Image 1 (cartoon, rainbow, N blue to C red):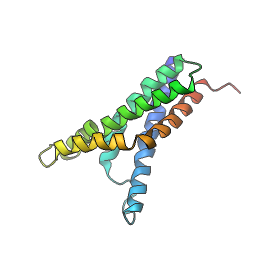
Image 2: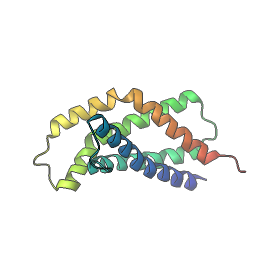
Image 3: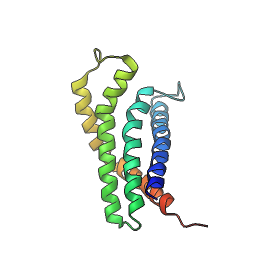
Length: 148
């Protein structure tokens, strides 16, 4: 059961690593005046995939061990996970993706990226926490769904 929880968590993490940046790029490009590319900036996929897949694997293990989780605890888990994922994506994830795509950090403004990564992750918590709770509830249901 625990291995299934980890695998289901990884599956949800991979799905969210593709879908959420695609949605983010689509909305951002539409608000900016039009869409040039369907995949958008590749750095956001790299920056988002590492923390999302790892956190969903860990949460999948945790949720496979817990049959009934109170709503208040699920909100707390959602807050913690979304804060960690958004902080990692906005700071370290951007550095990793910049190193992968460009090979160095010579033209990258590290200090401001770290500051604004933290600010953005805190500002967007009212959006990311309910989204994270929806994802965690879906994962919890998928792990413990009744047999038909």
